[in-house]
Length: 312
Length: 110
Image 1: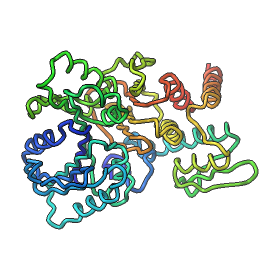
Image 2: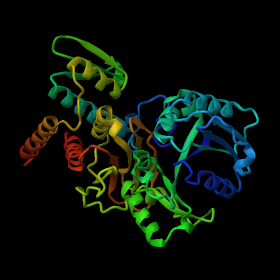
Image 3: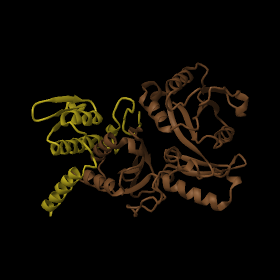
């Protein structure tokens, strides 16, 4: 499987600067790039100033919609490259108007790509210097909601109070994404992304009816599950929920108990559920499920899940 | 393939993963999944039962129309076609019915 890291973020947010830093931090890996530009004018690869083994520019449209077939072709070509090595890592930098969800759908729904690519991380670059105009955009919140890691670019240009406020908004939209500041193009220390920590919600899990203050932001629902959690009924519930409401379910992430010390991970983006994985943790506690949704009331979700997993 | 439970992500629906490591885990999970599916189908006046040694589901209505489904996701599509409306996990009447069944079962266990 080829490790794939997806980089998203608004136009001018600073994705390429962050990409350069990410690539330079990959000491033992051979980094390759696919960069999507919405404009027809091809930037020279030198403009990227990113040292990589290879770089492909996908231009003239957004890879999440009109250029998606070209992206598939590029990914297939890369996977079939005979000179590919085990140490290869592929970075996919999306255009500023791209929604990462259709790209992830495409990879998981494609028989060849699903068997050749391991989507390791979705990184969203957030422009800390942004005046706030893009923050009213639904895409801004969606890019954050789908991220495993958010990087605050241009953090050196704004006062700490603004950074704190922005960090709180990001945590409200996506409680599990780790957050790193980029100062003068250099990434600050990141919290280690252990599954146990990364998958654990930082919101108050007892506050099940918490609603976001901003009407436009997605709703975060965090539900704790105990040892009586029933995987069979849960599968029925989640698949039925996503069948009807998948468009409004931006992200599902969870860690549910299977047996003492053993957990199963749950991850979904809209209608697509990632293959669950078994995780063994020394620390045994309650599991949890976090859902980031729009247009769905938290109490309805919680009550529905409770009714389903208690069915048997 | 998952080395813990031999789940094949590219071939199987995600719900086929064995939640535990015991050999009975997958079977127990399948039974609870089937029972839950049957309960939801009954609420909508339909029936869903496992076919082909548990590798498929037969979704049918009371008039005898039946659709063979390979995955749970296909069951919901078939239910939508047979019903003329989409089944909904957040349907207040469905949730209320499941809660009543749960309360009744708890009462019987006391």
